[in-house]
Length: 149
Image 1 (cartoon, rainbow, N blue to C red):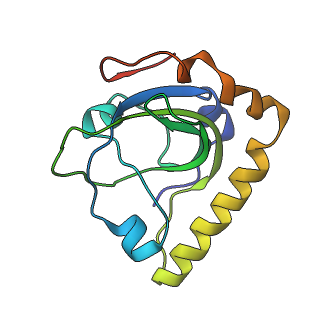
Image 2: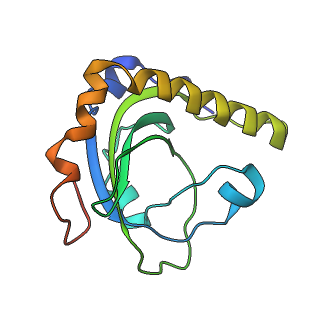
């Protein structure tokens, strides 16, 4: 693993808005980690800014035109398979939490994810982030996969 990304290189892409169909992952999130997850298809991931570092970020997400929730997103080397058409996932990535890293045990991974979730909840409660929950991005119907705002 390389050095942690410089904050200025990460922040130039944030706030970043994207949406796409939810696809099936490995099933590890809920089954092994006890944490619900949603996965984007490779097409959405491939259209992320090329110099956006693999890392853990926080932001807002909704499925379809449903309720907007606080979320943590891992941008990294997660393969996708069985791209079955599902609901549209809308995501606004608004902040950086930490670099992506490997873990010695499943328990360490779960602990780190739980810490990420708690930190994201705190940060997303700040006024500058809380207002994004009401952004028009989450109100407009999405007809196709696209990135940007």
